[in-house]
Image 1 (cartoon, rainbow, N blue to C red):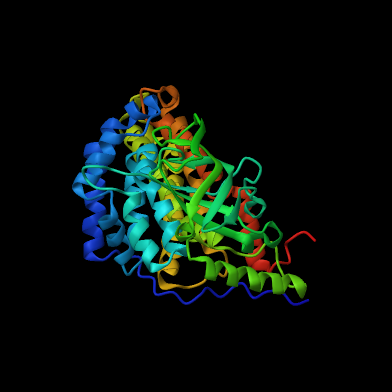
Image 2 (image 1 turned 90 degrees about the vertical axis):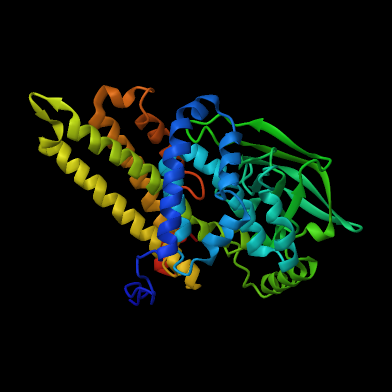
Length: 420
């Protein structure tokens, strides 16, 4: 019986080395995390509010804004964005997501927008040093979750405008962003092919914030529902333009007529998520690294029965495994990030592999760190419990661990693993 040839890895110009400029940027971000983010992390976790002063400081030094975005995208290795995210989230995941959250909106604009739309809207996701703005990427819905193809938010053409109705949930910066990128269904019969993305500005009538979500972790990052009730936007706010949308839907209708339409097929939203997964994985690596380093330092200095507890083989071996797993997760993230930058297809779901591994590692490492600290690991005065709370989301958002495994299984089996 023939089987898919899944063994050969794709050709990849991967050096696993940042450029000299990349090293300088990474170290600069790490310094910002040490000086600004870490001292404020516990306070903003307790407040469960967007850390505006830190966002303003990040904008002031050039860490938050279009210039930083351009620096990361200009990196030819593809590794810099992953490295920057690791350092930010090593500082604190909630604050890190507040800083990075607008990149999700800008990525959605960049993935599907025309050059004119990219130049118009991406800067407005960040604002200026004097007036910091936020962006939000709104795709998830109360009844869709992992089933992105079943979106109920509808967009219909009405004269020169589009009218959008629906409800989104679990949206980073939802309802408070200056720019919302909303994925809606134009033709539900076409599945992913019937989706379109729209830019909706803050203050547009009918756009409002629903319930604000109070979360287990990432509490310094605002998450809420986005409610769309008869939201009217100009035709120019359709990312990619109407001609491209109509062409895509016409091709999908032809495939449906001939019986070749695959409802599980890709879409711009899914491609955006797949390309972002190694970066999300790098965030999880940053959380894991923070917990590992803290636990290692504790084990080196905590004395019991007259000797440091790291001399106990059980603890030393656990720390060794923590170090190894973090490095393995980082390598998967860097491989996928490098492939994405080189334009190589994820034929074996390398983006999902990276995110899945990193999320599992972050959860396991933070759990082990609590155990190494014992009772102190469970106390809220120390940061390990916060890192454990933050890590949990990495097995859920941007595709659950089950969805990642499904994506990987489908890739390596040529689709044979899908239920019929």
